View 1 (tube, rainbow, N blue to C red):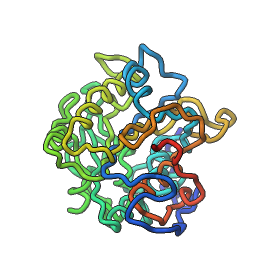
View 2 (spheres, rainbow, N blue to C red):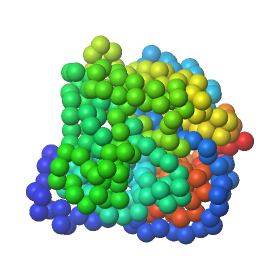
View 3 (cartoon, rainbow, N blue to C red):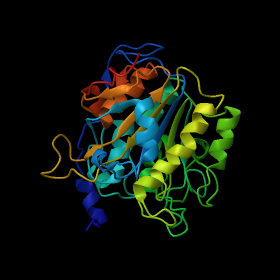
View 4 (cartoon, rainbow, N blue to C red):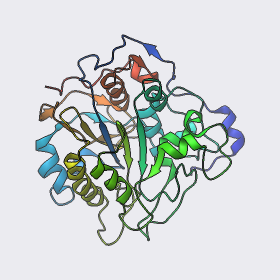
Length: 328
């Protein structure tokens, strides 16, 4: 039961304080993380590392694993979805994010990765499959039609610095509409806008890519009927396009991350309540191997900050270690 009275929102408490921690600043990479030219983050849903097998994840295990830094001790931070998306882009989350509440009743005016990138002059785009309009603040589509867009998987829309102060409508301000965009139309598996941007090399330096609820592994959708395989197919379709794009170079990186695992929760997760998830990084600066070092979404946030030369770390990223051991 995840419904709560709106009045209870006044009692929400911060689970990780979003106070920036200042470190050294530089135009290039920091703390052993190389400088990134472009980053592509692809986010899957609700999968534990132990669930991947050759039938459900042939691309991840057959191609991604041997061609990446494949981390075997990566963890989500919480249940449910929204809290993990918010954590990896702001270093903190609220109880209302754990309850997957909508931006209209769960928005924040705090520093975020997106505002950090703006301040650093780093272009960014949030790409959302099946979103019917840019900066769309409410749900749309269905999994029966294979176009289920859910705003709870779109973290930029929970921040006033992106959307603006007014969350009462269906879309945010002009800034948000220019930065939080759809991958294509609402047709099945349509990523035509994103694919065209790749083909022309006109993507941003930081690209946050969220498939719809069929292709991200959240729902069991026809005709595939296998959530893990559905996301695996998305990766098999889009990763080669990214790497063939004129935007891709030796200093670019693809991060494949999941919001949370099926394991975890109170009494189950050894390290964090969000579960033990797959995690991989692909790119010319990556040393391809398996890594057993511990990391989580706060480590990931700090790694992005370091890779773009941002020495001010948000919330939990300030006390996390960056993912520095995987680079050549």
